[in-house]
Image 1 (cartoon, rainbow, N blue to C red):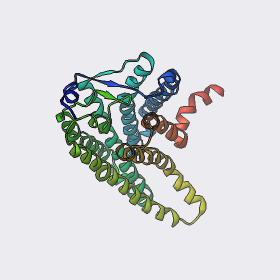
Image 2 (cartoon, rainbow, N blue to C red):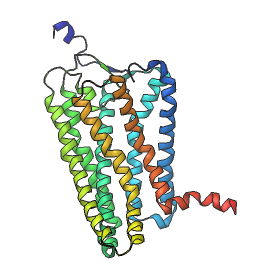
Image 3 (spheres, rainbow, N blue to C red):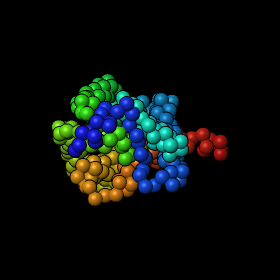
Image 4 (tube, rainbow, N blue to C red):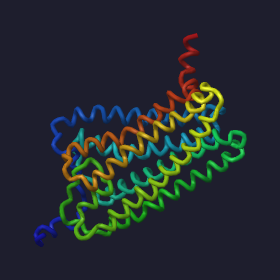
Length: 315
């Protein structure tokens, strides 16, 4: 690389977010479902928090974990969606250097936190189904608070090297990010020099942190399924398994596409840039919208509390 190419953008004060390259003429149409998804995510997760707060019968560990998930989804979606919508609506492509790294850090931080929440929710289901008589003594409200704090500290501390490594590189290739947000691999690709340590640490987080969370979830559900199949009647098996459906659906939405997209962003150079950015947008925004819908529809206590005003007015 020539000197003229390496000095133009040395540590720029701003990055330029391209949005979804190649789809600029239809930004208005893309913004409509994006705005709807974000609105549903905000309203849905706030509704979950409000219902749990106002209904004393829901002041239990399972619903506290659900509140943690709702708060995390609110932060994750708010990290990305407002800036993305400003690009679609107002062509506001610039983002301050420090703001870009803040967005990068908080998004990945809350991704790790959400992974940890899914892991402890699997543990809660394991204890509730495999050791039902001991559930109230093992999973107490005090324990939930300690677990929540541990998950928060794990996410914030383990992501610190990501931001510290990313900030130390010299950014001299360009200041243009071909996405509507700052995420780790998209930003590091703009740096000059050998950035393999950043890429390797990102893979470490993917496989050794979130991957371990996924393994613990699989182990928990292996034990859960063994306990379910040992139940004497089909109705009992279906009823018990039904208590896990919401959690399983949310896990599938979070882990499977996330693993695929994370790997393709690093290794697949043939995928069209606009397609990759568009699929990323859908993936990053959908879990925050789908989680409150899944739990609202599948959890009887939340569904009944949500429908109570309408049923009451109808009678």
